[in-house]
Image (cartoon, rainbow, N blue to C red; front, side, top):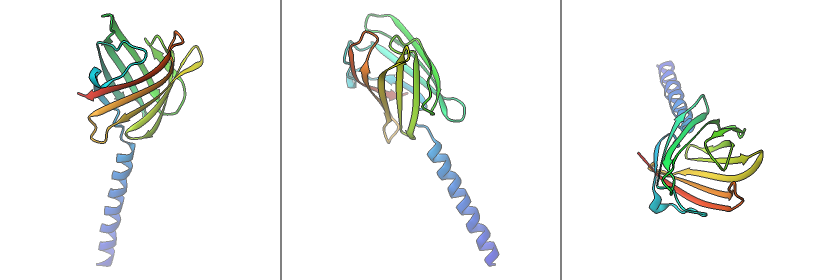
Length: 159
């Protein structure tokens, strides 16, 4: 009888550990996000008219990011990258202010990014997904391709 209880205990413990590992590996950044201009602050401005992000899992520990929107002047925009959370530079296509991005995961709700333009670091960013998973806040600090100071807080709502 004791052997049976030990077996059940080990089985329950193993299952619980597997759930903890799976939960810690979750990435709440994954999903489709729509810009909330009313809650966002762009410096320098102006803010885009619209933007939708599609973030998908890529490989074992990375993301595939696609952004489509419309600038303040009505010009369509499209940016994309695929990056692992390893702090290494990956190509960032369609972004006039960056040609590479490096991602690092802090936890399932938080990641940090560094963008470079022509090999020079220009933006440090932090992404935080709210505990309820409904809001994604991107804070950017640095300089854009024209040398202007960037201090943005960009808020997205999960779709």
